[in-house]
Amino acid sequence: MKNLLRKIANGLGGILGSSSSQASTDHPIVTEQKRMLGNYELGRKLGDGAMGAVYLARDAISGREVAVKTMALSETFEAEQLADIKSRFFREAEIIERLEHPNIVAVYDMGEEDELAYISMELLQGKDLEGHTKTDNLLPYTKVLEIIACVADALGYAHEQNVVHRDVKPGNVMYDPVSGTVKVMDFGISRITTESKTKLGVVLGTPYYMSPEQLRGLKIGGASDIFSLGISLYQMLAGKLPFEGKTAMEVMSRIAKEPHIDILALRPDLPPCVGKIVDRALEKEIEQRFNNGQEMAEAIRLCMATL
Image 1 (cartoon, one colour):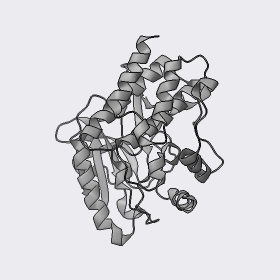
Image 2: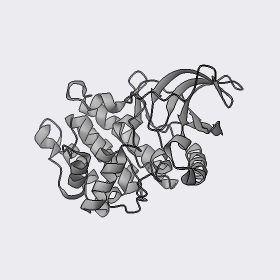
Image 3: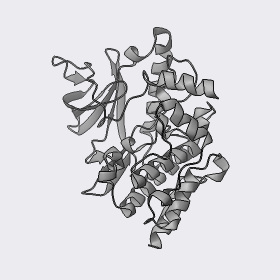
Image 4: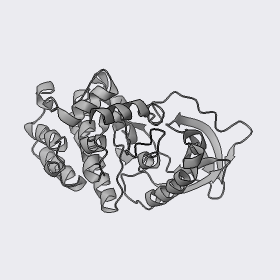
């Protein structure tokens, strides 16, 4: 187990990136001379991701404004891997395109041009939730519960379609405080990047939000997303992660082996039912977690009804 964690930690740097609002790396993918990608007229860059950039764009056919996420697959993977990666990229994108839920970002189209794969998707208002994981910018706990219930609904629906997110975290959830809209982003992106230079065959997500079974290299299902959502809920309530350490390997070891600090010890103002929801979502054993996203969402709403 320790060797596996060390290999994963060593391989994370080249594979993982933060969400578009967090990353600062400039990807020199689209030049000033190339402002078209497929049918899309690219505008300003909205942010950077693990393998490319996200642009504001206009569909030249429909006139609709969209967000276009680019992925420089040829720069990320070895030549012998590339054909398989591209095949799985488009296969996964087609699956994601079929997801239709009010709390999941709509995917419109995908394509490839000049060795650059891209996905066009719904243009969202608001920001991701990463900014609301800091102690000086936490949302009221009732609002956090509302948001997490919506995310749980979205995950439950996706799991029914046999789609596992694999990288649930605050940075992959967009929230618009004006409309109250909650949207889960980047379904399948972690699966697309599974084949890494580490050649571990492990489905990688962001290490601080990984489930115990992800760390063990086991086949994962919806329960893994529930665990990651539990970590996100904890962080948005406490302003800190339930499992911390000086290195990624230390964090992953604690996720796999150690219990989390009781959320009520950090936030004694929270209702006991919130503590029970967090505890159940963060159970090490799959069988002891919520059975699905809908069950977690229902538990949250029943808790809120008692407030």
